[in-house]
Image (cartoon, rainbow, N blue to C red; front, top):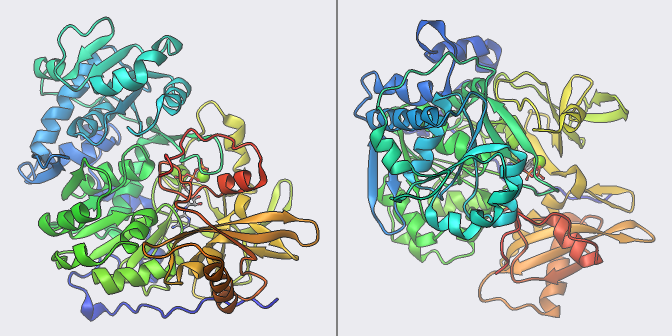
Length: 591
Ligand code: ATP
Ligand code: MG
């Protein structure tokens, strides 16, 4: 098969050039010497050997030591208000919230949801919930009533923290369908709210600022995170306190946190990234975590990077692509010299984006692969590693990843040969592995075969151990006997100067199985035309070869994405074929 692979120059990491020596400088040695026991020793544990609790490690151990007065969380309000919280402040506030929950009778394992947008109370509620051994189940504030209902109902949520406005708009009509939802706490000042409705502010003010975390088994449930719903109905993944080992370890080796770092994770805690890395990981390292209340806005983002002196930035391909399609003017107005590391996660990161980062932001963007189910980063372009644009990187120390192929119902075989596509699998047992899908034990069990956790993603591994994403198993296109991953076609198209974004599907064809079909949105200044279509098909043929290049291209203003910002290829396909759209409760409104 004539299949061209895109050749991108490796971005060499030369140790003399590092402003700060990376925590992970010798990958092979670190992997060889690695043990989870040693990582555990870098954390405190609860006093008197009473277990391991996320909130103790993230907040109390710093608040009880020299970092008490250090800036832990800086909140940037939509209207430019700034609120600062030291580790001491976070300790006191989360203690108060823990007491509020205890006074309401919330017991170990019971679920506490937060639907507020990125307000400081969200962060305080998460930490306070972990202190009481409740289970944090965040909700994305932009969800409509139906996805909110689904999560509250399926999660058996007992307490909901929200704003009065969101309650009136999205929750009030659901209440009689949610018998397990006993308490609603408003973060706003509310007087005599009604039965089961409380003012969190008032209750916090009346509660004690002292709290002793009860003994916590590392296997105690800590969070319930729903997946993004890209391939179907979101699943509720159960996570435990022991996940903190990964949040700490990846903070050290991947985010490369150092004492004076200022970190900004743009993900909302409604998604696992926004909790694992937008709350837990930076606090574990005693650094400053920036939280921005506002939604994406290119000028605002450049300003935050500049004015807040962000040194480590964690964002997503969808945001990067939005920046890429804009003019470079806002970028030129800002000084990004404090920035020393940029990471991305959530979708494949097109090579074009890695290079754009290097050229426009002065740093290549480091891609990372993980899932809600894995609880933390599993495969990464860690800071000291040479980057091969388009590759997800290499497995973390302590993580065994492989490419496998299914040989029988209950049997898989590791593909030893390099550069061969197969399913990405992980050896179970890492600390942040999900412990179940809530109320769906069978589905959970079906993820494990023959001693491997099967991720549902297809990938290949090259001769040097770099992993390359091919596509989700559901999205793979079978055309004329070849398997084509949408990612490589999309990346090829994105190299064309007119293309802002591309989504690729397989469209059934009687002769060749499926034809590769692309939906393309154009950058400002370009208009759809037959001529441009022909040009793009020719361009893709040249880059990818005729077997892989799309045969059909449709122009579209914006591609359908879910609220996590991921392109929903299943929806492109359903619409093209006139099939039912399936679960679209997490679909972002199409502008
Ligand atoms: P659902 O499971 O409900 O369909 P989802 O898989 O999108 O939704 P998440 O757990 O948020 O939910 O996303 C994990 C998936 O995102 C991965 O399995 C992978 O398909 C994709 N992904 C994440 N990071 C990367 C990456 N760096 N490169 C390629 N794909 C990625
Ligand atoms: Mg998934």
